[in-house]
Image 1: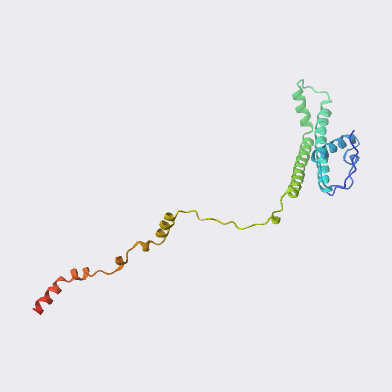
Image 2: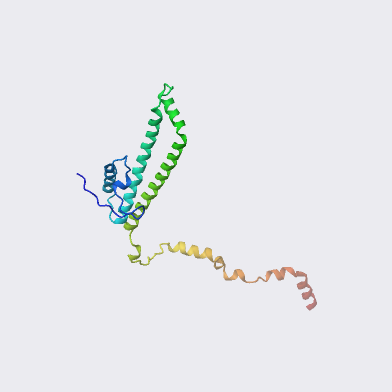
Length: 196
């Protein structure tokens, strides 16, 4: 025997919704109550806000079930009239054509309900992830020491590549006097003849 549930204030729709508020006169209120009990048992809300979201999920699902019943009722209403089509499929198509605008309206309502169901379910999951998320600010952070594991030879090679001028010998930058001697050989000979 399922326990009787106390109506929870639902800020999303109307306050203090009961099974009689959701189900119409042609529907059995216990069907909605059974559906709500299954949702509450499955989701197991932990606070009033989560319970309100679960109530909303059950209400949307009950309305989706109603849309399916309305669609079946529309077909049965048209198929109750005598038809000249011997095929059941042709008779169903004729019934759909007779209530095409009504079926289109019902389809839009059903699509809106499915989107509302998806949004409410995502909201409920987001609330639960937020409650279970760790508080990172409470953890102590320490600096991490990074050791240089590069071998000594590699460090020297890297330093040499970054400073290529260090490879040159001190004599490589000194000016050479050979160029002056080779550029003016005739002048040197003239000087020697004059002195002699």
